[in-house]
Length: 346
Ligand SMILES: Cc1cc2nc3c(=O)[nH]c(=O)nc-3n(C[C@H](O)[C@H](O)[C@H](O)COP(=O)(O)OP(=O)(O)OC[C@H]3O[C@@H](n4cnc5c(N)ncnc54)[C@H](O)[C@@H]3O)c2cc1C
Figure 1 (cartoon, rainbow, N blue to C red):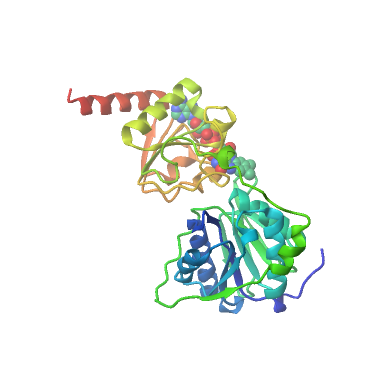
Figure 2: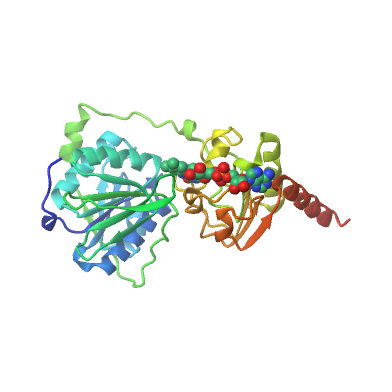
């Protein structure tokens, strides 16, 4: 890996995520963080967001009023569908031309793929799944990631290479809301030469979304109430108690990593934490989970946090508003029965 001269690199570039021509909230969250970094250290330079797609007018209007300094559009028929090879080539061209000091990506399935591919192409490192991004007085980024099973948080620095790249999960930061009515400068980036060259090697004919169909019910990140279970639930049968309680409260069931590994929950779409979803429900009920930092990162900003654990020293109690010490199965069964009784008027 060759070193670069940091002085030649300036600005913060957010790579925007778009689905069906709509700007995804994580894009505005990263713009918010980029503005915050610039406010902390103006020497880092201006903020920009790049949108890649086709027919980007309304998406451009949306990001232009988010407080970002510049919206860069790569708007071509060939970039209508996400194609990691093509998008990476376009971004490589943009980065070479603009030399941004920092590039922030959403840690979504598509963008993580893109970030790692781009890291190799532009010869720099990527800090993945960051739970925070800070900046020092030298305009160096400190990408904060959980390490050693989530027991400590580590700062990743990239002092000798540019750009400094990081991926951050949706929901980690608050979305950017511009305080002024000023609009971003909108610039078109002409990627025609790259696209022409890539035409010979890479062409996406269609995208099959059926394999990533969402599970039924309210997505865990949108639910007002989340009933989350952990390894201590013990069995698939006991897991049903969480489903019953969530249904009664109009909420969704979330889970920790071991529940996915045990097969009590299918896939990771309901897993909460650094490698799962970030949730901020009005009420979070955590049952039989210890409160590892990997999990807590994903739920600590919930409104009211209620935890049930048989161990009175469980770390989850440190971030809980209401602590219930006892057997989760018994407590959940009792709660479900009580709610049913109240609702039936008996
Ligand atoms: C790189 C990396 C990323 C990770 N990402 C995530 C992530 O995104 N999300 C995530 O959740 N994990 C993640 N993990 C795993 C994480 O570190 C923990 O191992 C996991 O969160 C622990 O899950 P748990 O609390 O369900 O299980 P445990 O830590 O085993 O806790 C079980 C708890 O249940 C309690 N208990 C047992 N029986 C009962 C009972 N009958 N009634 C009440 N309480 C009971 C116990 O006292 C204990 O506190 C990650 C790990 C790594 C290495």
